[in-house]
Length: 319
Image: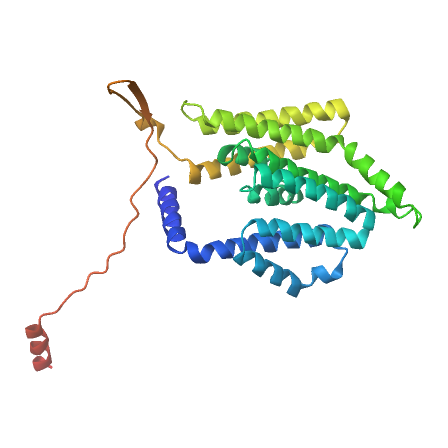
């Protein structure tokens, strides 16, 4: 445990020292992974899949604010959908505009949640999102999480319906619009996932703020169980074709990842909890102080050994 604490302190010290250089690198990697995932999942416009284009866009994102990554990802998604179907691109454009209004109004600082939610769905570990955002976010983060879920399921539905959309006549734009919109509104899996994730996130947020020992651990376990129960209930009610094995494995992995997040963000020693009571002219104060788990990072010292000049002269004379 001590070695892990030393590693954490060294990592924090390293990041604080080189933050000016590491932040653009992280933004570049996040943008790069996002664009690669979009291109591999949709990938209808070959021009946007070129390595040069992807690298240039990622480099632009690395020196601009985080929200610019969301804008670039949106533009690339719309470009691929335009190549796939004009009607789908128009529907997604309207949807993106509505989501952007909600996002910038309520959760403009949760860029990471908007980007990671679809990525985690693609990587088959989506259940970490509501737990993680409940631990480090606020209730307003539900807007970002819900937006990411809507984007993922909508795009996935459009791409999955490619064979059906190709059967419509060229002048059947109205029928295509109706088919896409009806499919979005009838997507029970999407709405059940939104309900499960938002509910889980809020419950985790409320529990981890309680003044009890091991509140974060209780919040993680409770959130994971609640997420599983809501998704299973939705599967029984609406036949969402949920993978039970994938849900269980994904939830276990999410709990482990959440514990790693807790270690780096909120690692305290409850065995050394102290209770302090004091008063002033108007109030009595009862304070519970829980110390953080910290260790002193070993410092490397270079010791210089100076040889007396007299000894050096004697050695030269003996030679």
